[in-house]
Image (tube, rainbow over all chains, first blue to last red; front, side):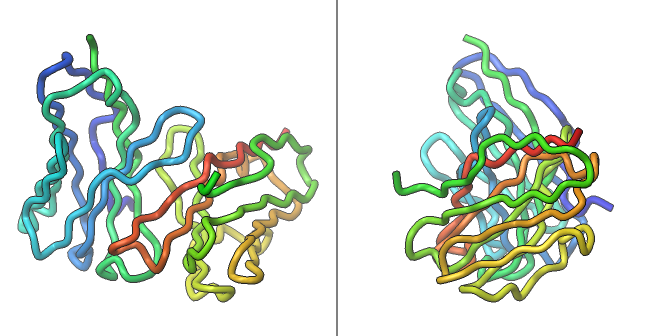
Length: 114
Length: 115
């Protein structure tokens, strides 16, 4: 049973527009969430994170929103660039980020068209 | 480079053989993780090391899988009597301490193919 779900396997967006990647989770004990980006033949790289005490975290073009009541988070990329084309993984933990494993979703492949 | 290094990058083995995968974490990182990604799937947690001990082995799929870490550095993941369902990309990651303020840094993975 998947605890972290990314229901859209792929997303296509025009360059300059907003990309919105969604993630849902089922475990109410999760209190720390991260987004990773993965290019082919490379390991995932950390993008942005958010603690459950916040509902928004922003870093440049990337913003993560957390809706605890809906057990939903989203990653917004504005403006989208062709170099953003990659697979994006949502991940969650119930240890406040202090230890233990991360539970990953299956990923969403983002394609940004010039 | 200063990143996480994994070897080999690709491994093809016959069913029933044993394989050993190696991970060199970033120097000074106390936490080390093994994940695997099977085709079309997300990243699946296998095992986590804090220093040389493994407080969480809950993700190891069977007793054919084992891992160790020495010198708070190199880790090896061993799969005995490989099966075709073991085919996957095996990813290693390290972090300074957990990942709250120091997120995981992943290597490029070892692609294992069991024929």
